[in-house]
Length: 131
Image (cartoon, rainbow, N blue to C red; front, top):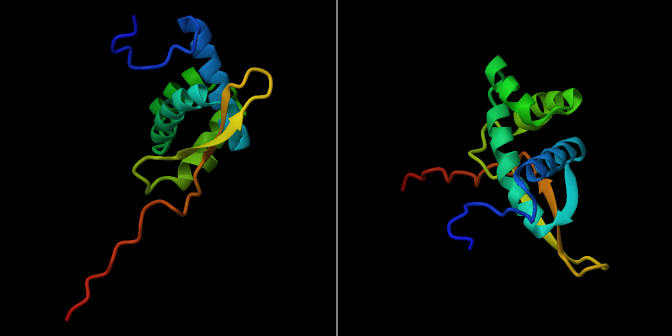
């Protein structure tokens, strides 16, 4: 029974699921976008959003928290210096998931997860016109 689990277990035990999400997050930060199944992309989105939010403020504590999850030093450095800096003014929603169809072998629904463009942070505020 799957009552109020709060996340998708992806058919794996806890350590396997954590390792999978670590590797997917590292690949996404390294390459900017990856293609995976829709279920994995939806779970990865919550992980990466939290990492980017944490990396927006560059402090020793935040670097250590991120280093628990992103073990590749170059990728962690890229997260803090290149990726998170682009989204400082954005209140969330750093990734997008685009459905791409079905995988040929097992017809699993596939999706591309990628970072959004940094300059599309929020709709432009309308200036008040005096009439």
